[in-house]
Length: 217
Image 1 (cartoon, rainbow, N blue to C red):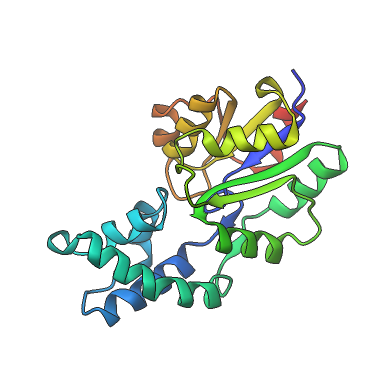
Image 2 (image 1 turned 45 degrees about the horizontal axis):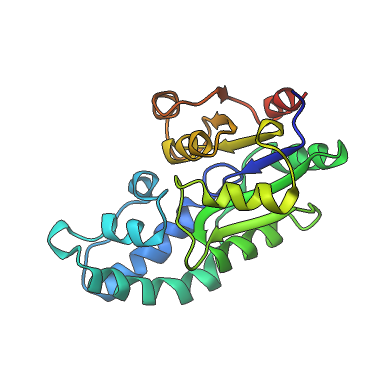
């Protein structure tokens, strides 16, 4: 069945954001007296919202809610200022979004990144793309893999589940698609590997951005 809507994860799918996430978290850790991590470590830390990111980055014995909130308070103002310093769209993504838009397919973003940063990054890097919805982590809405964010997008667009495709780079994304009963495509250029995508039920494995076009026909 032809797709009328493609829903994209943000970090690791549309944008490579790991360096800015690492820099913002590391500066908060250092200010609190904790050791920083190499950028590569953050590929495993991200994916379940920033509070989980902070808990994973803190030393095991320091993973209290109080410490997570302290890191969060230092992270957000820094990241709001610096979240586009080293982040970039993955190869072929701008061209893919433009082509889908020109084909009349509606586009949306569903991220576990907090809403303010999600909206800023999407607007900054994709100013010519008319997204039907750009949703990050919002107050009172459960994060992925809960299907609430996908359900909200389907409601806003009026597109049926059968006509929607969800694209992400992690097991959380594949679980989200499954929980929402929509077809999933796992991309291998992101933060997690192909095995994680397959184990978590990816309907398709995508090696190149342009290959997503084939799934909409």
